[in-house]
Amino acid sequence: MPFQTSGRYILFSFDMKERIIYILDPMHTPDWDPKDDPSKYYLDRIQKIGITLGSAMEAIQPEWNDDVYDWRRTIPDHIPKTFDR
Image (cartoon, rainbow, N blue to C red; front, side, top):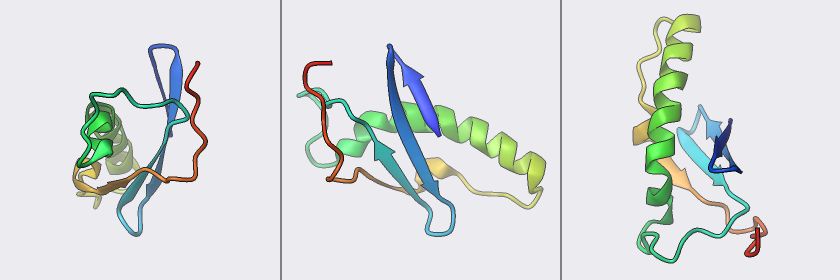
């Protein structure tokens, strides 16, 4: 699921079976990002996506009762980063 913010795009890939969110961001995260869990930098975006995804899933699968905000988040380490925009 692409997410556009401030002129940049981030791709969030949802593994519905394993309940994992893969965060694919080609830009370098700010120096103030949380060092213990860099995925915390994306929590506000995941929350916005989760609300929309939850509504969509309930429409197509009425038994859907999951909150993607609680899913495990990971940032693959093999994504090349761009440091100069």
